Image 1 (cartoon, rainbow, N blue to C red):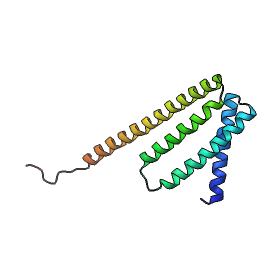
Image 2: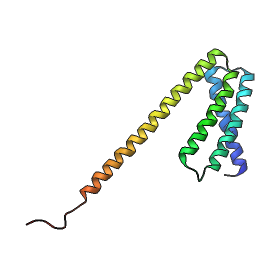
Image 3: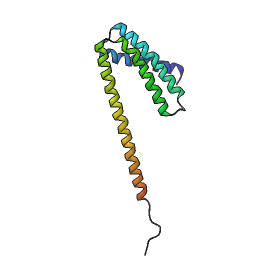
Image 4: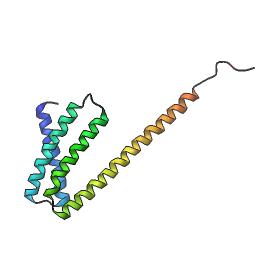
Length: 132
């Protein structure tokens, strides 16, 4: 990805997230501006982390990205009023639950395929010698 493409991706990611949040929480113009700046800065940090982690362990990358998300949310929360904060946290918890369900479904499918593969492999074993 070229530098220009990366900057565009970071900008559009921040813009999309800010627009979704503005619609969901009915943000004021000053809130939108402040939150966009936060999302844009953290989009840049996320892209840098992913770029640096090309050879790293996926678990380490996930931990880094989760930490960045927590820092981003910590900067966003003071900008929101109490009602917006409650909605934001509720939405975040629901999204986390959906992600966990998807991860579990992927793990279940992988485990099922491993069991099917193991069973299929054993069914291919043909005895060479038979007893008379």
